[in-house]
Image (tube, rainbow, N blue to C red; front, side):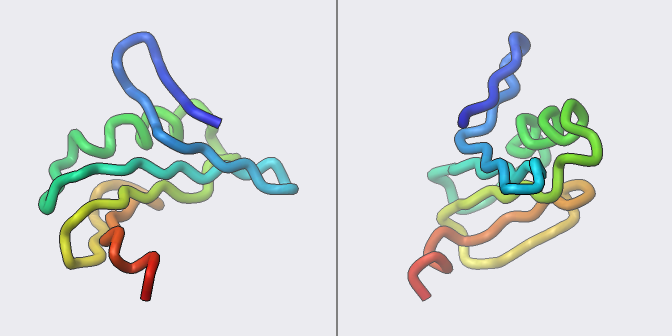
Amino acid sequence: MHFSKHKGAEVDLVIEDHRKQLYGVEIKSKASLKQEDFKGLSALAKLAGKRFKRGIVLYTGTETAGGFGENLSAVPIANLWQ
C-alpha cells in the first residue's frame, strides 16, 4: 500500500498487519536526513492515530537514529543485508 496526501506528504510503503496496525517505510537515497524527510510518516501517524505503530526511513547513511518524532527512526538501508 502507498500513502499520499494532497499537500505533498507521501509514504513509499505502508504495511498493515493482521491486527490492522500500520507501519510506514520511506526510502531516501541520501546519506543525511532532516526532519522534513519524515513529513509523510508524521502525516500518516496523525491520520492513523493508535493504529500507527512505527515509521522508518531507510537511507544510505551509516547510523541508526531516532529523535525525529514518536515511533519514527532512520535506519541505514545496508542493515537489511546484515
